[in-house]
Length: 257
Image (cartoon, rainbow, N blue to C red; front, side, top):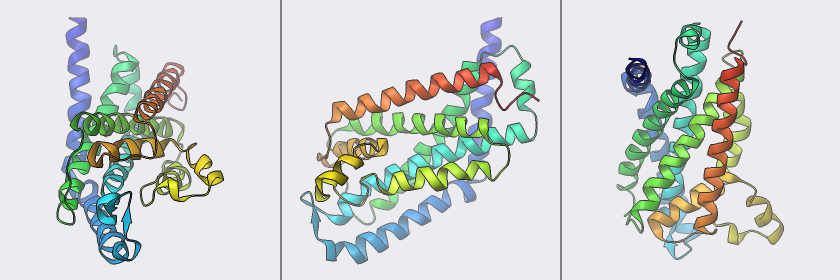
């Protein structure tokens, strides 16, 4: 009976999270598609021909995997941070915390909601990309695993941000001042082999670089970093953030009045 109750709670959280972003698709799915279309037009069609080829590919083809990954990162993160903070703000998260539901179930439910939105938006952006360039998948396993793990990672990041946030302004600080710079400096628009040695070394401290390059390898078969190392980085960050998030839930940090 206890396991059945936990399963019902788990499914309920997932349904609530998925239905939330699907219900307001005009705010959650359409804007990223429009934004990515503008990126393809401006950077791919207008600027790309002036840049030429990158790593042996047309510039439009080179940036497409990075733009898809950008949409996955932003949307998986923003879905969880907005949803969980909303639960805090409306104070119904307290009912969930006192219910006989393991913290891991609460965390996993919200993370799956973030992953679902990230994957849906990523799929939409991929369809948009196909209107501008031809995408030939080099390795399906790497493409699927990297995009899924990346969505998990940034869903966890959004959850932690929401736990600490005290106002609606707080949920935009990390995306604006941390996430956005890391994304733009993560090798989406260029190969780090073009950088001087010092800045190439600095770029390798950016975890998003490994996700973008691993995803690009899955699609194009080229990467600035070693794929096994990229998977290691992703798994390490997932374990660290998941452990930290569970600790915050157990302590009630930012959740209990």
